Image (cartoon, rainbow, N blue to C red; front, side):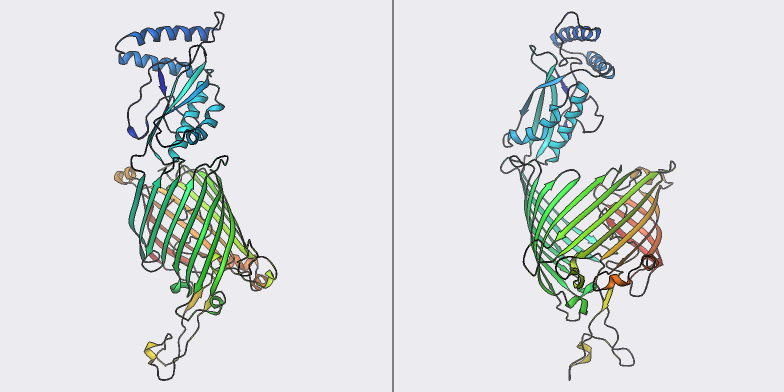
Length: 554
């Protein structure tokens, strides 16, 4: 008889099985079969009880029809035995069924480590839950069911692990959608295709595209492998072509053609290599001097390491726990003089704790980042424009773990260092209405605006109090309210600006905002309707008091 063990993995999995994706109902049949006998007449009382139970179960199995009451008795007997202490048991064999395309070696590499160290029934149940989770994370199976069955009669105290899988009926999947970005007042069309497990190694081939009506376009294709021969970490390779339009904010357009390779990927660690050709252009011809210095072609060759832990109970509405992110990037790996050479470091720390009433919780966070050039003559060098820090936009700081970027109440790239754009005087005989500059009522040329140039050092902080709303319909649907306050600042350190840096002045220049709103969480994103009040901003900043919409994904 078999004891099903398909359940969500965790530290204390339940000894009851439910098949994946509702593909059937698993009912424990034998409460003690598979536990084994120690084989000697002079064993302790627990083993005598096991032998008696096995004899009783054998009589029950001999019956043509097993009554529901006997099944409940068997289950109760098993639960009492497991709660009494560790039940010694080891794995004899792992049997894989249902894989017509997927290689046995791939499945074994995902589950054997979990079962190899199990020495009791309790540990074996935990290992089964972990193995089930790992197999489902491959994203190539429709369902996974793991059953613990009794081992050979001549090997008492053993069990066989039976893994039944159902491979995806349609290996080709796709998504398509239209997405809005209220903070940028833009819309985008996005779509993707995935071809799963074509060669039976858990491989996933994918292609994606996105077209933004006024900002970003992207086409990319990639392949990923969960394991490759002796390499135990997932491997990934991707080629992409991107186009960013920053004319409105910084008077330049950016085009990138790049290759990225995932060198290591585990639960907490990621290591990638990027090789990207980049071109910055200014079709408007009004960019500031700081922008014009970096126009043209450049090459990015960098290694990026990310360490991430997230022990919060939810990504959309955290009420307890903490999360930490550290990202280190070194650019300039190569001898070419056009390679961008820089060192970039980010930290992001989040925490949450409950207050004990109305499901209220306080979320808080601090993020910081810095970028500096390196190499020959780095004291007189500047940092790459696209790798600097930019702040603003309406993404939620609660669920986004991505460095010092979010500051509610401020527009995208709405604060920080900026430079005056170039004024182009009208040509002789040219209609003044067609020139790129404007004139005021007195006929003098007005300011053409400023380019946001980003910062080399940035810090943000926030505090957020969330709570249930009084109406029952809101509580049942997860809709809740919150009040918040956030602050941040970023400055330039290169081009001798570091000589003017002081901690006191940096703190005095912090921008800040506060507000309240209603949050609508869904499975895929978090929507907020907030009223933001700007507490502090400076000249050339773009903060606005009023109602704002925010869409964030975890």
